[in-house]
Image (tube, rainbow, N blue to C red):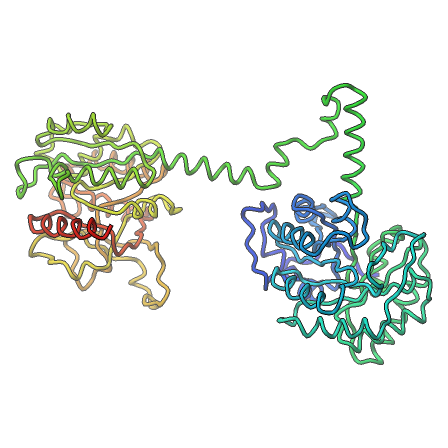
Length: 600
């Protein structure tokens, strides 16, 4: 007897496509991948065990259920969307009362929060045109298969022994199968015929005759059903199925739904030749019993306290449906929004000596005002300005703009690294660095803080159009990918690791220019501070492009991080920023802003 326990990981292709504990918000599977997954599972392990789902939450339970057996993990291979349980969930009988739109809504709900293949109970399929439409819509959603039964509409549930089980003419039903197959787009979507001969009492020979017609019509699977506890005729059908298929030259999958005869284990059904075993209504039945028990207990005890022990904790449900993941992302976003933006603005610019460069007017407002506008639009609130030259000019502006001011009394003898570290009190949770002479769009900040790297610089590859060495030496960057043989690509990565940064890099060697905006996570800020402290112990010698560590610029410190093996990444931007270095830059920026104001 073949084992249907856990299989080797190499053969479990589909299992490798998902994490061991899925949350709905993180599911990533295309409809095409899901459709083909059922065939793939059966091809690799020889069978599929399916569990019923009637809602998003029950689907998550079926998707994430695990059992440890002999040191290996066992799980369900897919989900069954049943008309019985869908109707029951809505408080209605299984008698084709729930319409197709409602059924499709439930199917979409299940598919939205899972990755496993879904088999749909299509009842009788309706009229041929209705079945065509159902096939098209199920395939578009990503269902792997639909099972339709050969009864006349409206059908009655097969478990109701008192109901009339009128069968459809098998020729007409075969034509419906052919029409459904013609409506499919892919070869992977399956139409399975459910033969009700044993339910209706027409016997084994009628079941075999119907199976032959349906196989000739192109069906992908045969489900043989029985309502008996000892389904001898069903097992006889399974034994006769292989010779029938051999005679017809093709063997569709064989499906079992052992609701009434579930004392026969799945292993035995696989041994008999069944390819798919569907446990068709147990999650709904379990939830119904539990709900009745809890409702009764609360009435009897006069409070819900005693019922807590047989109810899942709210936190567990939150976790199952992905609320924990959502809340974690919210916390992460809120933490990001509390990131301080540090603007070192202490130095004296010889081109604009009369005031701090941050307070130079561009289009009637200081550069700092434009920066704050972009920072606040990006959702960041806390701004720290390090002042030095003519620092008193910030006083009036800081109160209005709600700034934190830090002083750098040694600004005339140091450079940007020293100014930045005057604000280290605000770096504990990470920070954003913005140079004081930049105009920029808020989207650059948004992109930076959304990366998953610890140290990320905004870089631009349009530097070749600037006047390097004429107006100023640019902060040029060489990426690690430029050393790779496959550097050129039609699909460039937006984030790349950097190998060199500095003003002495030659133009034809560089890949990018550092624009003066950077993001450092909590870990990135710690790395930067620890490196700074270590470098301070040996500050007497030259430091990269600086004659001493006290005169180090940010590019020198970033190069030190790279040399020490800490990954420093660059996020490529191509528009949305301008540096104010010269009075000509000022005129260009004012003209651009005027043009933008007219367009808006």
